[in-house]
Structure formats: C-alpha cells, structure tokens
Length: 186
Image (tube, rainbow, N blue to C red; front, side, top):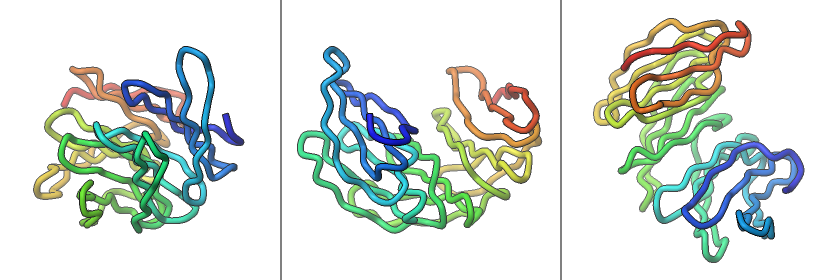
C-alpha cells in the first residue's frame, strides 16, 4: 500500500486502505493485489463505505473526503479538529473530532453537518443499529448517543479506550492504556 497504512474498508468489490503519511487512499483488488492510489486530504485515517461512496477522515486537515469508488473523484468537507473515527448509520455519516471533543453528523448528499459534544478525546465510533457509541480516550468513558437528538449518556470503560466494535449483541472496546478490553451490552 502507501506509506503509513491505517484505516481499511471493503466496498463489496475492492479493499480500500488509507495511507496516513502518503496522503492517499489505495483501492486494491482482493484477488490480485493490484492497486490504484488516489490523493486524499492531509493525514487520511478513518474510512467507511456508505453503499455508494467511500468516506475518509483527514485528521491533519480537519476535513472528510467523499470519494466515488469508480473514478476516484472526491469532494472535501470541513469537519471538527482532528477527525479520526467514522461510521455510517444507514442515513448519516458520523465523524469523531479528537481535539474538538465533538462528533459530527453529516448529510452524505449535501455535506451539511451538525456537531454534538462528547467526552474528552473522542476517537473510535460504531453504530449498533439503534445508537452511536463513541470512545473518549482521555476521559476513560464511552458515550452512547441518540442519532436523532444527539442526547448522550457516558459510561466508564478501562483506561484509554480507543477502538470499538459491535458484534450484533455486545459493544467491545480496546483500552490501550489499561491493556484490557471492555464488553458492554447496549
């Protein structure tokens, strides 16, 4: 891939990898390994597929790129300070803004966004089919957010919660400063 591979997603046909230090995203054929690189914003990090477009957080550029998978043509939208995690809830794109202590809810068609406060240092993000879950790395918490109202409830986790995943039943969180994994039932 490019220099500093970080985020990865599958769009149903190709594997997409963000290359943090190269400011590119690689589109890779999973059968052959053949790839094409496309320019992104500064410091591409998180990546998600919304069923039509690839979305990339550019953490050093405070933007998110919407890329068309067949052409590599992109549009950049401003977001909060240091965007990292990104998820699609079936309607909206959600982006964590690490240094702004917010999460942005973005309309995937217009790029219009609404920011909601989270805990200190939002990083990882996941959708469980009902709620948005955000890890707050400097607060040692996870926020459970209503995707319609932005109302949230914070729960304690281990030390330094980073990445988060939903397995269909439980929320799992890696705690990088505590060498543990937290399991929560939504």
